[in-house]
Length: 430
Ligand SMILES: Cc1ncc(COP(=O)(O)O)c(C=O)c1O
Image (cartoon, rainbow, N blue to C red; front, side):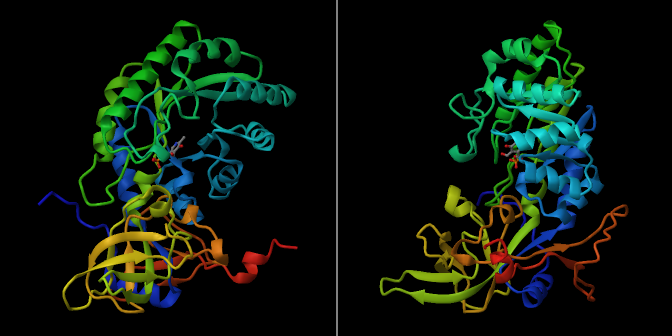
């Protein structure tokens, strides 16, 4: 029997209360799990000057951002929209790095005029566009060029970004010359280098090698008289979706820190999934059960690829459990969503207790790349989100617009985003 990790799941009574009161489908996050993950990064990286810029793309619901900010996180924004959300969550421009494979003129204008901590530029052309905006505004913009280190993250091809054939950044061997030619122009202050090799990386080797390459290149830039301050090593640390142990944030820190020790470079890391992934559960109900003559048995849920796209998009695996398992022998189910798409499947051949309509199910480890990727395909309103709120001593929320529940024996929770109505869904249509 392979070693498996325990489920990070809130207690079942709390989940059932949320399903009953808020309805399903609904995302439920556990603040304590986020806090634990954040502290693991912070403690692991403590021996070296560092900043943890949470990657908003993983989940940018305001209440989670506020929680992470209060814990000490800064922000990695991947679009103009994410910059605005970061500001509304209370991050100041000096806490925001702006990344993105293609940035529009408007997005650059905003980032330049805000004076963000760094713009991670993707190309010489983008450096030039940033410079001309900075000069027009009589300001100087802190920039880092994204380097494509040609490292195989050994992750899913859709979330590997550090290979030569990927669209991200500029090839390693061109970067030194690009800094000489483009980063020293008026309006730019080259402050760093940026590397991100992919997501859901479960082997430390690619992350260690990326750090080593960044250090080598940073030293070469110094030899050229370009005094960068930081190496932004991106995000990418994976989580365990199937219970198999994966490297912890402490092990990640231990893998990358030797490369940067005594270099004089501070580091930025941009974790997303590893901070919020395991903290999120998608609660959903069975809305139909059927069996074909050949034995194939389906459980149709009220959540589908519109609520959690990862299985349809990447063939991703998520554990699925019945929140109140019924007595009886386990049976094999095809666990599917209600949408008119054959890829709308959460799990094939899953051994589950007997299921009946209205049973509440939990799809685990759905905190990252879940709600942010939700869509209203099939005119399905966006689903609500709930935070099980176990504040640390210094964390106070003053959000009075949300409901809260304090019940004996259950954990405190509150709605942090309510369900969209059909009127809201249609509100932009003329
Ligand atoms: C530039 C950048 N930084 C950080 C992240 C966050 O990655 P992860 O959620 O795997 O930590 C991503 C996501 O792919 C990214 O593209």
